[in-house]
Length: 126
Image (cartoon, rainbow, N blue to C red; front, side):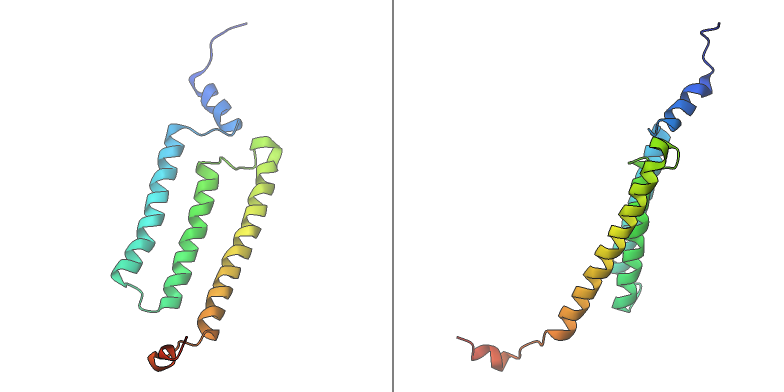
């Protein structure tokens, strides 16, 4: 038997165990920075004039960023832990959809149903 280890065997073991390499962390970090900078730029420059479209674009970037974090930092894939991380991914996506759609629904209805008070009516308050 030989104790010689092929250089790529260690890398394959690292990926199979679910832990990332420095390259994976750097890619994840760069993607996170870009996925944060683009929505920030969109809002600060007013590149999209419609506020509803801007909100939807920001939500889309947020969803993509969550997936990036789950893949590059939480190491969720089909190989790790016999696929249980995929179940966690599905659960996270369901919670994400419920949270985002619920938040948008509440904010829309608060904005739509709350009547702004005029200055004259505010002066009559106790």
